[in-house]
Length: 74
Picture: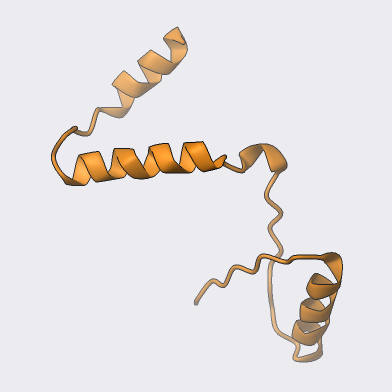
């Protein structure tokens, strides 16, 4: 099984693609992302920098329990 993600620019594009998939009797699942789940450009840059730091050995992984404890304090 393979997953494809489509980013529609308008409702018409979505309608056309879904009609095409329906005409071929393809099974598909629509997943809508809530607006509050989208990351800002600044958040994406921060996450990518954290990943680079980890890969380059400038930081280490932390146990999940420590992370949860820190989140409860915030």
